[in-house]
Amino acid sequence: MPYAKIAGTGGYLPPRVVSNDDLAAELATRGVETSDEWITERTGIRQRHIAGPDVKTSMLATEAAKIAMADAGVGPTDIDLLIVATSTPDVIFPSTACLVQAQLGIRQGAAFDVQAVCSGFVYALTTADAFIQAGRARTALVIGAEIFSSILDWDDRRTCVLFGDGAGAVVLKAADEPGILAAELHADGSQQGILCANGRIEAGQVVGDPFVRMDGQAVFKMAVNALSKSAHDVCRSAGVGLADVDWMVPHQANVRILNFLGKKLGIPTEKIVITLDQHANTSAASVPLALDVARRDGRIKKGDVVLMQGVGGGFTWGSVLARM
Ligand SMILES: CC(C)(COP(=O)(O)OP(=O)(O)OC[C@H]1O[C@@H](n2cnc3c(N)ncnc32)[C@H](O)[C@@H]1OP(=O)(O)O)[C@@H](O)C(=O)NCCC(=O)NCCS
Image (tube, rainbow, N blue to C red; front, top):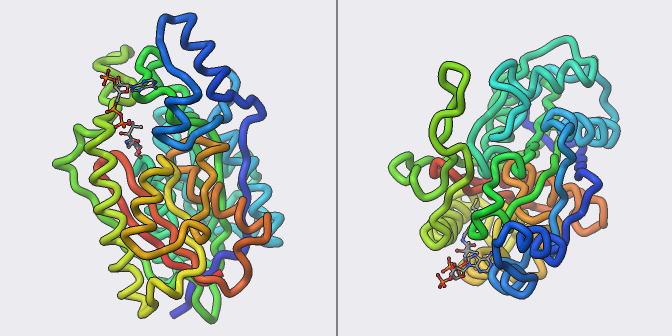
């Protein structure tokens, strides 16, 4: 049975940077009060990238994918599985994965989307790992991409300051040695109400509330508890101690969540990759973007053990433990 190994990574952010001060000034024109001080202190976020009005999720995904493919030394004819994790697809259908496939000139293999909100990338990576282990694919492109700004209510300061747009990608290849050491996924649909966007299209109209709504404190507690248990479980199933984890690459929602998590797991802050200060929460894109940043700046090296974790709407969560 082949193993799956990360062979390349890439990230792409839309060029427009909106600082907390910029955002506070923009929101003030709508009568919404916030400040750099509040956002920084409560979340650790300092800025986010926001896509222009004509930019679509597939475009960000394609740019990140090109970089990951170049990094892995693979071309369009090598990819036999393409998965995009997103909650902000370009259109109802076809899937964003099919749109990306066309933009990259890939003509073979399966392409589909995974919808697990901020856990989407971890879900997609676990799925690709299973395809490769089962011999159903040899070179998978796994992308997390979002234009979350398109589903934010700019009059709701409890949510609109938290998110940003972007895309991250990895190339996962069949290999003789692991690679992905273990993975585990969870969902608890009974908690759907704490983080949701409940609108839908019906008879050509948007019905219900299409914006992100969140019970911040419930999400906070659930995230810390779910991720700490998941970290223990995934390490146990790989036979790896938490002390052997070189880098933690968690979903980037709130620096306070990450500090709590690190403390609970005994993982020092210096081993936790943090990009939320620069990117804010990019939902399904946050983990592959952070992975790419830490590989490119030389922190994550070949052979390092990396714990990736996702958590988000659904409620969903999960972990992937990988040797780079
Ligand atoms: C959202 C979050 C930052 C809010 O922080 P908090 O410390 O729980 O703050 P609260 O919601 O209790 O709000 C405290 C006060 O700040 C106010 N407030 C909320 N957002 C604000 C903003 N952007 N600017 C200024 N004030 C704000 C609230 O109205 C409240 O004021 P009140 O006491 O007068 O009603 C925090 O709960 C969180 O990060 N939760 C997890 C969110 C998350 O990770 N989501 C994504 C998961 S994938």
